[in-house]
Length: 467
Ligand code: B12
Image (tube, rainbow, N blue to C red):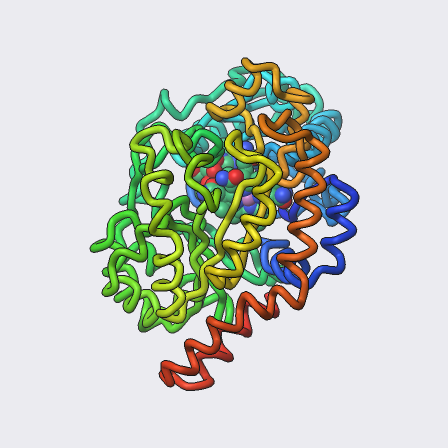
């Protein structure tokens, strides 16, 4: 069969005022450029486990959200879904199926809303795909074709529709194949994703990443990670790496080994982790030596009340709140920039939160700041709670799951106050003036350290400012 892997990249937001600001504010433009296009790692993993007799192609949707015409020449198309683009994905799936192309859908969204997806896909995969996918391909290949004539590989609509990862052997991350980066050919990605771990030990009520993983936090063997990175480096000159992890440095000793083995590759990278990364000075030194350029950390709120109970296992975030300021300083002192993420509109937030976030970001001299509104993603405890409390404005409007569009009733402010506060903060945080003021201490500190000289500073500025 000819199998297409159709990725839906790019960022999504609907709020018109925010979109308008995004086109002009330096900080937003900069970040959008960086993340605008990343390959779909999930689909590259599926390609890697596809039985070898099939012909594989990787596609990206066009910038207007339409599918490239070549996908219609495929017998089977695999689509990966996030909530924000799931309606676009369903529309593409419907069009494909009308011409007899069979469609398999998986990923975060359909894993928690499989019945909805079954209206649009021949095969709905729930959970991690690696061990299920070969059987889906086999089933598709063997099933008869009402539209396709001879050979029998096109169009069906019959057969087994739901494929649950839980009914197959659990994915063992110590034996993951190498994602098929080679299928990306020379597409113009500015970053490449690699996974070093899956999952996160914490359970934040709003978090949508963990919802379908049935296993605990898992780390990959370091040599396997290096193998994957080497493969990317063989395909692209000096690639910038983004670790598509939920929380990379949970295990500090493993993290140190990862950094030791990364260092000789001399590649720059970015990752997501939690604030405890600052606890270990040796780890920070090794991260710097391994050319870590930025860590993204979910701080969520500059004040403790709103954090209380958010992490449901050990109240991790509320417990660590009073270490935030010092931890950020320690990380940035090592020449690693911090991208501090804040969620606006938590139940503990009043309209005072907007100047508080601004004040915290300036005082902490956060190199980058990400502000998003509380977003009820399907499958999360937050979604269920807001639904129970009658606070979802438009339940099942998955297209609003962008992190920037308000779709719930905040507890201690109005929807309009939340929107206006978001605009107010966006205008300030990402303006040139505030951006320079926030970043100046980072560079001054590097100069003061007199270390690695201007070269190091230029190396940091280059990927972060240019994208
Ligand atoms: C990299 C990334 C991106 C890249 C995605 C590039 C791409 N084309 O895939 C970019 C920067 C474009 C991006 C954009 C957005 N993102 Co994003 N992103 C991530 C991140 C950091 C890693 C995703 C990843 O690579 N995971 C690793 C792979 C291996 O896992 P996976 O994709 O889940 O795939 C596995 C299974 O799901 C399954 N599977 C997946 N697809 C399929 C398909 C089939 C057929 C089968 C069988 C199986 C299968 O098998 C795979 C292997 O096990 C996650 C956080 C996280 N840790 O997950 C957020 C995350 C996915 N993003 C999120 C969000 C909100 C967004 C945006 C809406 C932000 C915005 N406002 O624009 C946009 C949406 C863009 C879009 N087009 O839909 C949310 C999504 C929540 C949700 N329910 O939708 C996450 C979880 C972050 C968060 N915690 O809130 N993102």
